Image 1: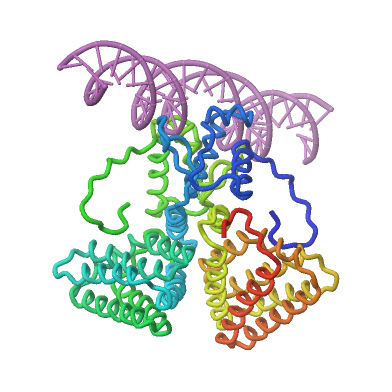
Image 2 (image 1 turned 180 degrees about the vertical axis):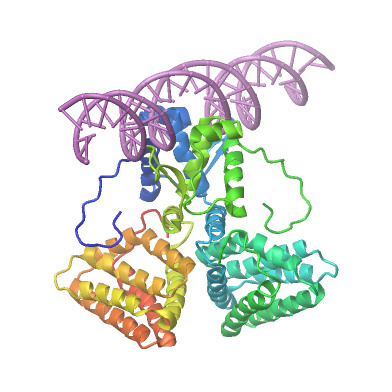
Length: 254
Length: 254
DNA sequence: GTCCCCGGTTTGGTCTGACCAATATCTGGG
DNA sequence: CCCAGATATTGGTCAGACCAAACCGGGGAC
């Protein structure tokens, strides 16, 4: 597993646990391409025989794959039952990032910086690639946010949905999924900040204006402007709103 | 878990599995900050009593946390034994990305695009923040790559290490870890491309020159140039070298 | 003949209880 | 005082059993 070559060093030979061996066998086949999305794994009891391990070991390996968004298990006998290879990376990514952010391993400023980087890049791409359908989706979210009297929760949800729509319009699934994951990982924190805002309507108005400006830039195919606006939008929001509204810090000593 | 508010819809009430409940209890405490890095979880058998579930359920939950890089388990009785909260996000990230890339859920072009985005942003930051120690680390990797007769594997390792050093010099752990994860996830593919190169020395010379130029820009505190050079370096490399050397595609349909 | 219900089969979910192995700590003899 | 073996703690592994969900097919009602 050596990432880089340090000076020669003797480290203890790693002892693999059974579930890791099972995991390796399955990952092998995924990496080799013989297991593809939609394929079904043999039933647990069959894997037990095939691999010569206990069912507990098999199940632990499957749990890991499931947490990574690579597998989905359902009971029963139907065609959609059993353990099926899937591809839901954002859920796993979100969970992973959320925990590590909570552990203060990722300072909140880093998250803001990352969002600004990822989302402005996505916006630049979106300006070049967005389809009419993508634009319609963004408009729909803008319209929802424009509704008066919207609760802060709902506003936040549509805010997120708008940013996700921009990211996905960029056509880069990896960046879009990372965007979704990072954003969802801080959803709770953002919502907390929303609730501590005094003059909510003023803030909402400002966010609406910024979102509309971003949409206009994307619709006008002006990638540079779209990217810049997104970056400013994110940085300003965190500096003025999240920062000013008092820190949340569920765990972070910061 | 609703990310965005669709039209009202009836979906089946989710039935949580036991290990998910266990997971939720532990994550609760992590998110609330009562479990921090270095803390030890109660022994498995004790959790069994505390939560009223079977040991298998507890263990499946722990496996998930371990895969996410949040936990580390060791047998024995010492102070470092048991289940300890840790923070090793990049390993989990790497594994997750690697599998999803292999499942062709993330086209290779998306990976290149993401690397270009993340690493050029990191390079810009690095130009502003890199310490002398960071610069020394980069120089060390450059020196290793400059050694004549270096094997392609070793070159690749130091290449990666150089990029990681730049990313970490940027001071943003989240972006650095994503960089490491993305890079490691395609390590195998890059290495394959290296091996298919005909005139290796010419390519190596070019890469060396580009790396030195990047270092110079960072050392000169010229963030714009550093960012631009990194972006070009990554895009050109993939277009000219990886692309020209023939696709790898362990699983990708492309 | 068609439709519905009910039971069987498959499959994951869960639990119990046991034993193994690694690792530290304690303890007693030299 | 030091070292070695006994012991306790803790994760790792396994076997076997039973539960519950979900589909499928046969047989009876109409």
